[in-house]
Length: 110
Ligand SMILES: [Zn+2]
Picture 1 (cartoon, helix red, strand yellow):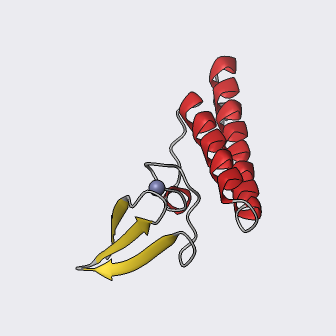
Picture 2: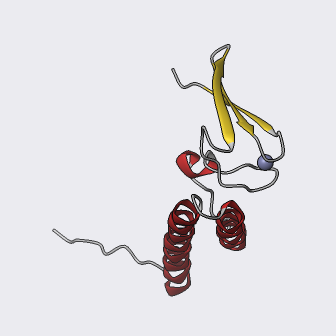
Picture 3: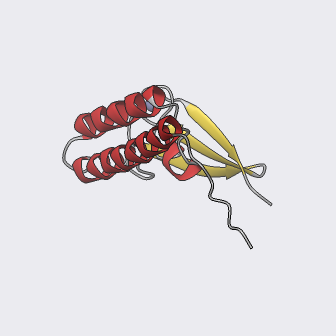
């Protein structure tokens, strides 16, 4: 029996690796944002800006758990109870950014 090796184009491999690196960078920025947040909310949102820039550059789709942690309008790092209000309304999770009053509705998964 012959085992066929899966050929990966070197350029494609490089792209995969770059995306992996971008993901790591983004996770790092989010970690820094959450660390900076209690002392300096503006600094935290700066890290979110950086994370977003990396994501856009690499066309990386942020996972939902990250997407929910910042405001899509002003890119503030959101901490429920501090600068965000979270409510359940008609089967939606409603997150209000208290910095710019942007309202985000997140439907519940069944
Ligand atoms: Zn906002």
